[in-house]
Amino acid sequence: MDKILNYAVVGLGVGMSHCRGAAQAEGARLYAVCDLMEDRLAKAHEEYPEAKLYNDYDKLLADPEVDIVSVCVPSGMHAKLAIQALRAGKHVLVEKPMDIAVDRILEIEKVRQETGLKVGGVFQNRRNAIMAPMKQAIDEGRLGKIITGAFRVYWYRSEDYFRANGHWRGTWEYDGGGSLMNQGVHTVDLMQWLLGDVASVRADAAILDHKEIETEDFVFATVKFKSGAIVLLSSTTCAYPGISTDIQVIGTNGTIFVDGDRPVVWKIKGDRMKEEEKEIIDAFAGNGSAAWADPTLIRGHSYMVQDMVDAVRFDRDPMVGPMEATKAVRIVNAVYESAKTGKEIFFD
Image 1 (cartoon, helix red, strand yellow):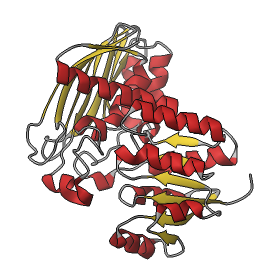
Image 2 (cartoon, helix red, strand yellow):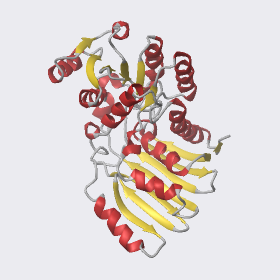
Image 3 (cartoon, one colour):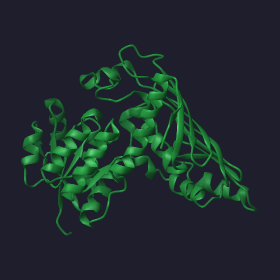
Image 4 (cartoon, rainbow, N blue to C red):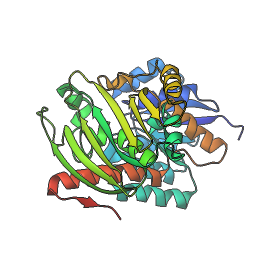
């Protein structure tokens, strides 16, 4: 497809990162933005004066020039707005999580099949530089049988963070959870992407620090995989001032430990173990992010926007479709169910 695609973004919180991605994307342009808050529209207009401004989503969808819509509203509204866009003939990229309920994501998939349009989800951490060699090493069996590991999200969010933008964060209706569904869902996605199908979860959750939220700000879970691996999953938004996200995968022939996007340990059995570890650590030493302390520093949306644009241009599937997006949400909701009931939750 030679046409320059017209990209629109609804929801100008995290959606501003989608705007930047669309403005930079090859084969597309930022055509329109939409938000109910006039100050957000004014800020977007200041940064992208050529983009059309909408404060009515229906009017945005009625614009025949719009080709793709990024849905960046509160998580509990994702499916509703995504389906509206599909029904209006627009391709859709949906912020994480694609929705807070698996059945709603499955409804997106149903409408996607009916319309033949493209639907992508945002799990940009799969594109972190260290993830490609890490996944390759695991998939090739270089670590041997995976025995255990840890996926830990130690972030910080202030009370003001939850009060902002209508106080939707930290609510069950619109956020679908707390530290795990909002901040930790990326790491849950990486966990299942790296290690495969989950067999069961057992979890505890609590509100330890924040006073104005309904959902948890701390989760501690044991995740058993169908492969036999047993892994620790934990998340919090109480870790002042925000520490890191670390991932450890331990097998019979090797161990990989990643802090953010920076390898700390890379020991895989073989004659070149020390040399390989040094090469890997040196190659990725400059990687990192402070997103665990400041959500405005989250990066990577440009990858997902470009992937979505390319999916439309070249008629291929986006990197993360609805069925793939259900996996992390299913795990997160099982963690919450276990924490609520005190029972181990088993997967089919």
